Image (cartoon, rainbow, N blue to C red; front, top):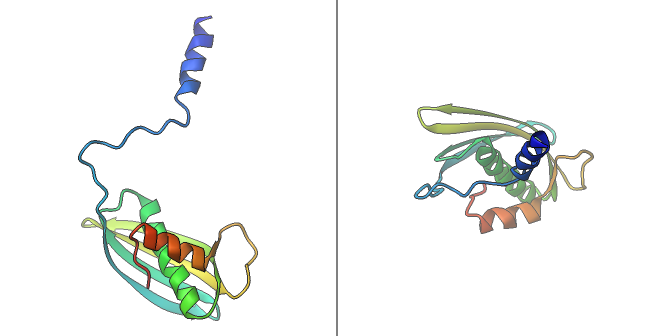
Length: 128
């Protein structure tokens, strides 16, 4: 009986997100994007920011840059290939690679450029 109760208590905690710490406001500083065409539709995005909470914040910044880049090139979609994140002296660096294309590419890590750029604007994340 005691194990069953313990199991329920452990399961009850799954999926519960703790409230943010008081006074821990998310105030990132986006420090720029460097874009480089690697080959054909393969593009590199190097981003830098301060105040990221984790790798996901850096990855979102790079996705915003990739989505805007796709729109600038007249494409509607991008597919994430990889993102490497590093932190040095309080600056988070992301090195992301995306393919851009006019049609929805194959794969599970695709983004609709227009939808992503609109979401980035709503969340205050700059694009290219």
